[in-house]
Length: 319
Image 1 (tube, rainbow, N blue to C red):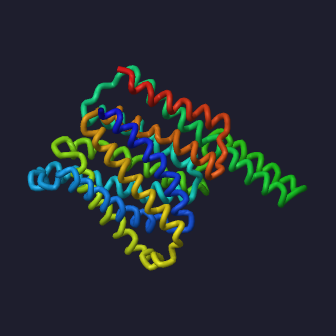
Image 2: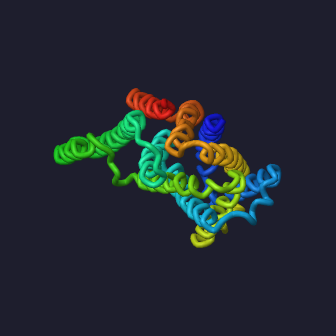
Image 3: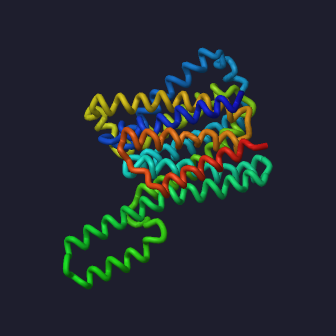
């Protein structure tokens, strides 16, 4: 049954990235994240009351509270970095990096949760890592080449500039050019905190009903997100958000809530090193939507990388 919940989480997570991308286009990412937490907070506690889990609140141990709070902080940090990266970069580039948290999660699950390391898991780590690199490296190269081409046109006939451009292309063409790409830094930080979230939450919900655990975590994320908003003075911009942006931000909050409820139900019963990768299959839906609705390009190399990521994920289902 937990496998069904894991795939349900993937579907809603895929929708979240697209809805959020549209919603934060003209809105500060921290403010958008905070607004989403309001929707998720209401949604998650509504599910607690519907499921009748509220009465269990008094029986939650201090250890469980500690890990739920820590996972909430990790989630909040991951969100803030993720949506900032999403605002600055393409969905089809940010998402693969964020989903590569699968690899770090598997490693942490093996070290701290005592989950086994099989040949299939090892192969999956290699496939997902290679696939993620292929999906972002080609686009980064294209972006660098486009910039160099523009520079060449502006300084046409200047041999020195031409040689400088060629040298720069040789230096950065083989890898990812990080300078000037802040979204990449935010995406990587989001990945690290997302991995910590899964491990901390796995421990935190081991002795508690998953809906209640999700609702408790949401309180922490809610508080953290709004503290950041008030510290940066972005709360003054709430009245400036247009209806379209607000609608998509709220919709992304609802899909996130659905994804969370499915995800933590699956995480409660299944192994973290398997549940997390299935959840990350949301990348398929995200890439498809970004291609059809956001008109983001998908190169052959990116497609090959996507195949590797999916293949690596499916390997984890092999016992």
